[in-house]
Length: 433
Ligand SMILES: Cc1ncc(C[n+]2csc(CCOP(=O)(O)OP(=O)(O)O)c2C)c(N)n1
Ligand SMILES: [Mg+2]
Image (cartoon, rainbow, N blue to C red; front, side, top):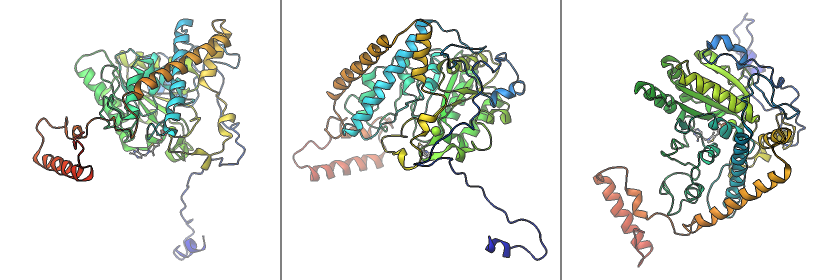
């Protein structure tokens, strides 16, 4: 401070300028307390008409759309009134996704893959939302929406082959594990470069409208990634052209070890970003499967009616580490997850079905066991195609294929050099395998 003061010109009474550097409320060892967060009451937010002007739904960007109450019943105008069968299907996808995450995480610890990312606690933001879309609406995901592939019936063995980068991997080991792609399931290739999927989704939606198609696009992006310029370009294009797109912002409050304050959460909500662009903005309890479904359905109806794009913030909590490479005990309080007031989406859906008289703990236990067994069996099948480091990957030569119709001369040279080096390193072995 003393140094700053000497820089002031004589006679000036202007205060020295200061920066604010955000600091999370709780660090390891701290007692976490979320009582400062206003989560409102289930059923207390209005449900405006889907063609509503963004300026007329201002409050929805600051409140929290909630449906499920502490009584495990559905409340208010956002209740999507899903049938018990649909709710059980959703629960089944939740259970499968959780079992899948558990086993793949363990597989990384056992050295079968180099990398994995769980979505624990955030299942509703991908599964419940995608169930509100048509199966051929185009998904532009981040890396934490494996639940969408599971909900869309993508073969689990393909996911595991990709995670193991084995000879069954349709992406031929060219993508980081978990960065899936499936044209048949309208699931755009995951990119590790954060937020690139957002302008791509808007562009795809614009193309769909230009062609006079009926399919809409939806993208998922982490709250930390909304600080990327790409996200803001996406918002601008979406509003300018009224693109039939949904921008889902998953606010799990952490971006690896950076808390959401570094993306602007101390100042306003992520849903409020929408207002400045003239987009519809909704802020939703991301751990409430019914609210997630209802919000996505609202935005899909809006987009399909050419009434405009929507930005939805799903307020949730990343219950586990960022990835297998992360250890959250080094930067946040272990208590946070327990104290987090919006609970666990799987438990909330299960308890809702039980409250409806449509489910019980025995059936839940059987469902979870069946999911774990399915994942185990499929893992074994995928392991027959190879695991990390066991040689059963795609042949080495394939790294020079597919990008160009005719291999350019400089890549031909590189390929020849690589082949020669491998012959020296592993004499007597097939250099291209
Ligand atoms: C352009 C870019 N910058 C940085 C990274 C490194 N990185 C990978 S994930 C991540 C955190 C993203 O957090 P968030 O957007 O909140 O998503 P979450 O992981 O919480 O789902 C970072 C910084 C990257 N992959 N790409
Ligand atoms: Mg995040």
